[in-house]
Image (cartoon, rainbow, N blue to C red; front, side):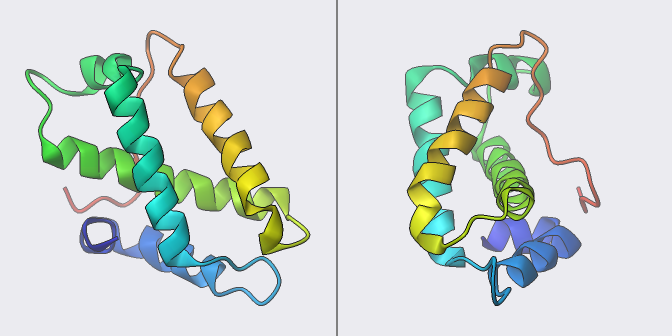
Length: 121
């Protein structure tokens, strides 16, 4: 989450605030681990090719992977809060639902999974 907090400070604060919410809160670290695995599996499967093709001139570098992770962290948080799960025990169910949404978005040839909010980049 350090790239996220350094480059998207306000968004990272918002995500952390939601993670600490008394009813809708979740483990910031566990979500981070799960999103890293999700991003890595999408990368290894080739499903991220359209995103990188549309957003990176030339060969993608680690920075672009970090930026994708920021997008996933921010969007997962928005998704989680909007869904209002009854309990953190439903995390896996919502994680899979979010993963399906991301994979569906990646089917769009014009896909661009970039967090464009208040980036310092």
